[in-house]
Image (cartoon, rainbow, N blue to C red; front, side):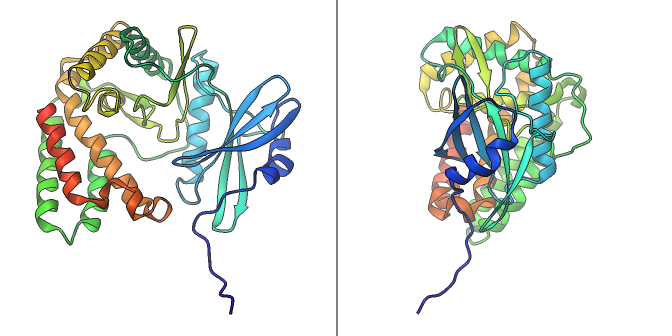
Length: 326
């Protein structure tokens, strides 16, 4: 007996992308498309005679079409402002996005240029400073960006309130742990609300600036993976870098990396006193947002593949973050 079952996550054929999708884009002499890696979404490398590109196939339902359009417009805007990003490649017929039909439903495709170089070496304080400078330049370069497309903002509602909805539902069977996390969320919110909102610089944020979504080549930092980009408080980008593996949990070396990054950032854009005050609160918000992200996409990552699998470990991580960044 053969039972026909549905599919919640498929791997799109690289050969079919090569034959049916890549010819729709304005690139010269595409030679090969290979499945590169599976991450938050699926990435394929497209090799041409004289260039290399990366094609992302977003998971079904991971984002709205409007959110994907928002990302493409941000990348295009930054590229036009001469800021180094893995910019989007246009379709022959116009626009940037292609919709493909997968077994689980429609998926969106975006083709971008490759980011030259290699990931930063965060044991190099000069690299840390370069990254900080580049992030500040990205924030300044994106000033003036306007769009008719909308997506959830990176503010108290988008990062904290909405995250807690998913966390409450997932952890309802662990009331004591949930109560502790609720208290952390309330305290974090209070820290941010205690400073004047106008003292927190707002605008386009990368949204996932954990330290790995950039390459350095000959002293130039190129950013990529803007799938979480949105309008919001820019201190969130700094907090996400501080939260990332290059800083948090790395002891004295992590502190040195953070200070070098901060020095580089403030050499381009000075932070307000309020932003200095709330950055650690946004580190906690990043942790909660990451927790909620895994819960939200549990059907794709699996129960054992998300941070929320071990609730005791979740509480341990939060306590450790709070003790490191009171």
